[in-house]
Length: 152
Length: 121
Image (cartoon, rainbow over all chains, first blue to last red; front, side, top):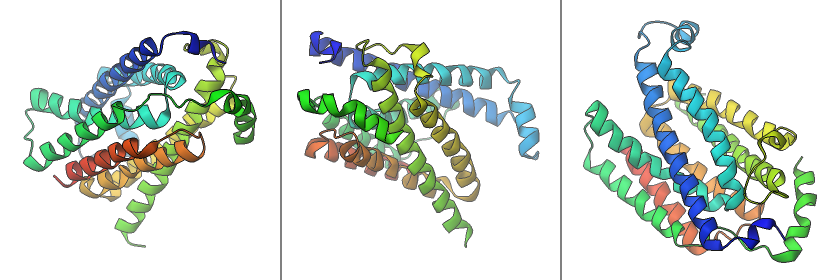
């Protein structure tokens, strides 16, 4: 058995959601910084010149740093929960990015977009009602290393 | 091949890489934490080839996605890209043996529909 099974499932679930909220927040910031950085590139220049312009941009550097932090946070989340539980929940970033775009860039939001966001929210609610981790039991846990090797 | 078809092909291959990248990271996370409980030992992550493979998948995906966005309108690329939610759930069910179940599938379906609506808006 894994060590984590000794910790209460409630605590585990809370840690999963903490990680998810961090992931969604960082994802939102990455996208916003990215957008600001990309919009600062002059329109007419080519791909290599774009790279030359974007690399020294502090917004791009912040995005890159958050991207790296995001990776470690995501690995922590994945140790605690099913991939099919956490991955769809990250779709919540569509909501936060839209919200931030309205506030920061004063973007207009259509009714169709609101309907889409509502559907995502409902979908996330459905998933959040399921167990965050599949209980494999003893048998499957013994198989685990073998399957990992096979994939390698 | 038309530009549109080429763009959609790019998106679909990108989705494929995203899903396999996620699968690889999940496997890597499990391997790196098998003795340490919930915490990933950062130093140990790099010893797992599968983690490097996962990162490689995301790098390829980023290139493909950039190409797709140059070829396609966001209103096409976005809905096509949302297929990745379905693909990840399928891989999780068959490869990781996660119990996806009806309720999670409903959730995934709703999210898919939601992203499609956003793409059309």
